[in-house]
Image (cartoon, rainbow, N blue to C red):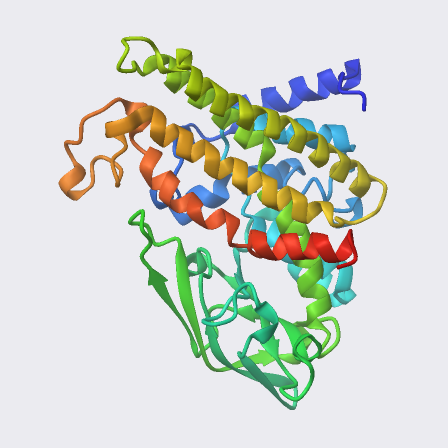
Length: 395
């Protein structure tokens, strides 16, 4: 695999870098926790990219994609990680958008895709339920058809940022007598519909990033069903493959490695030397870097596969497993590096207003707590190993 950029690719990198430097909102620089952000903060960069035509680079050109090569998309990710931008939310761009342009009707594509491209529509994901997470096919939210509508009743949980969402995509059971995967449909639901209520769930880091969503006799038009009735599991699997590829976060993990090195050079150990000179710490950091380099090669292969017109395969499960494990190991090493300065909540909040320590230690513990979930959402890593065993080894 040739990892050297061509002159044209270097020119593209310089163009991307200049655009980000000139257009990324100054007030967003340095904001690293979702709890620090307003709804407009989340969307402002997405809207800027929408106007530029760069908000959905992986999409087909006919639906708003850029037509970039796999290398250009890699460069795009690298430069955004370098600048620490807040990326467009994945729920529209990486999840429901590809489902709509792959399985939707022409009318559905015309109605829903432009708002995703522009950043005008905020989407959330209604998959998990109490008792139906990794075993998603056991979901119980029910949709009963009455004429041109479905009447939906049930509860979804861990619905990320649903408190801000305009629309949601939901898996519902439309045939309770069918086998689990064969009785599910994929519905698009206006979150302002009567009967929809959202209740925040406070997390260990003090934030309210996720929610319970309650559906009480919610009327959903039949023309907001994607694909065939009772065939929603096909859409669900397709969506999850795209989601898992994006969870890997290789470029941003590389940036976090550099940040960790900087911290380790500043922190002084018990022996009076910088932590970066500690043999045990350097060994653990080197192991993460090696794993990350190997994962980057896998990500490039996945990008090349997509460029050739083939969707994510079993590699998406591998990316999800290794990517999230690396992210968690980096948060653990960062906690180790800052030591006693790793406060459980960001400074400036309540009893933590006058917490001591360097600025780089401020968000270390909340991020550590928050990222415990990355090995669970999108299908737990245990489930991903089962998928690999079945698809590759035939077990």
